[in-house]
Image (tube, rainbow, N blue to C red):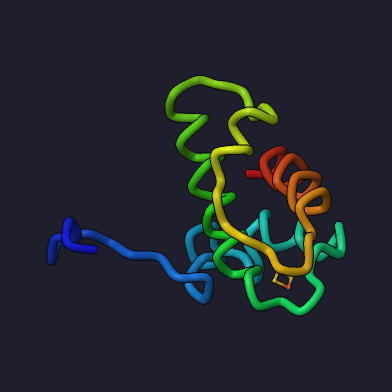
Length: 95
Ligand code: FES
């Protein structure tokens, strides 16, 4: 947070669809298609981390591997990790 500058742009989960001009971002749609959420508490952070990871990997020209997904450290108390990984791969294909 201390590194954020006044000129930096910040996207929230609510603003994510506007980044693609659709009602839902492809990652959000993948989350629904894969029925990822249980209690939902962690899901906005999981989706934002997933989008950031996919963008980071694309910019670096690297594939989305299990090792790369292991670097997403968001905690899900409901243990939805396998569905999260499936959704990330599905969402990434449509980003
Ligand atoms: Fe419940 Fe992740 S869905 S904490």
